Amino acid sequence: MFNKVLIANRGEIALRIIRACKELGIRTLAVYSEADVDSLHVQLADEAICIGPAPSANSYLKIDRIISAAEVGDVDAIHPGYGFLAENAHFAEICASCNIKFIGPPVAAIRAMGDKNVARSTARDAGVPVTPGSDGIVETEKEALKIAKKIGYPVMIKAVAGGGGRGMRPAHNDASLVQGFHGARMEAEKAFGNAGVYIEKLIENPHHTEFQVMADMHGTVVHLGERDCSIQRRNQKIVEECPSPLMTEALRKKMGQASVKLAEAVAYEGAGTLEFLVDDKGNFYFMEMNTRIQVEHTVTEEVYGCDLVKEQIRIANGAPMSGYIKAAKARYHAIECRINAEDPFNNFQPNPGKIDLYYAPGGRGVRIDSHAYAGYSVPPHYDSMIAKLITIGSTRANAISRMTRALSEYMVTGIKTTIPFQEAIMRNPDFLRGKYNTGFVESVITSRAAEFNR
Image (cartoon, rainbow, N blue to C red; front, side):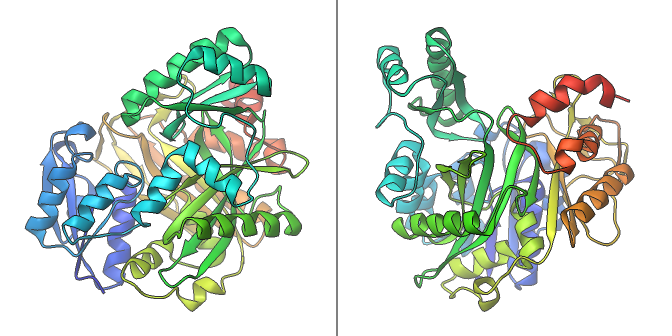
């Protein structure tokens, strides 16, 4: 097993990886920006090295500084977590050239799936359904208008290097297409350093369903069921659950087989997620593959009784897939709420600042993944998520009632959080019935915000 692993990330995911390493007997090296000097991942790692000032472009995205820290710390491997450099093929190549194991898939798989246009082509070749769209990158607005006319409005403009909902614009007519085309390109260039976009048919108000896959270096590929991520705002997920209330056994089998087939097609290794859009008739369309651990991996872990991060590390070290992963079966229902430092009743404005009081809920079937604590100052430079609250139940109703109780116990003062908004979701009749899609937040919750703003 590895002797020491550098965690090239911050916040709750850095803490999650540190804990997995400790359980495997691996020493950890945290890297941090000047803004994160008081973060828990810095305090709980065996060693820590500052790699630059607060902006991520000058710290967590600085490959040379991370590699320098790895060499000074004499590490065997680097775990990138999610976000930042997690899906950066160049970073994975640099790690290999420095004889440092990148805990993730091979470079070729990152490249094939990281370019959304190439990923769609690979999926088509593997026989996985994709939405109608452009055959490649769309270079001009004239070309964009021609493609939109061919496939019909509405359409979605997407960054080929996109992620996290950035570089995406819907268009319902020529005017919004032209505006969205240039807006998506500008946002993509700023966020990813790649202005390339493609166009696909917009499936309105679908279900956003993703499948978790695991693959080792010995040819074993399995899926561990699905997660429903349809509760989202501006393509940012708010609530996730496993299994999906939409799913049937027949559809799960069909989508699971498609997920495994696509992972096999790119010789995948480690943890990955296949994301699909699903309509009310059970038709599904490949959207993208995330070649990393997902934020919401926690609900799969609780439902299937496994540790995906530890398995990632084992697989990266060359071990065959654990028997308990290959034989894993769904046992419970789990729900995750992302707790963000945002004001949900002021257009979700970020609300960084010092946390005065922090009390996390507990009790049976409650899990908290968080780097927050009383006295911690949430920096304004990064993603606003400060915690993930996960509840587990023998049934969906039980998991929801437990989440409702846990949210009511959660106390964070000094900053505003999304907790009251998520409490409202848990009380919503349509959510309770499992009748929701990606339009749920805008069409149901925000339209009745006054009712929920108690």
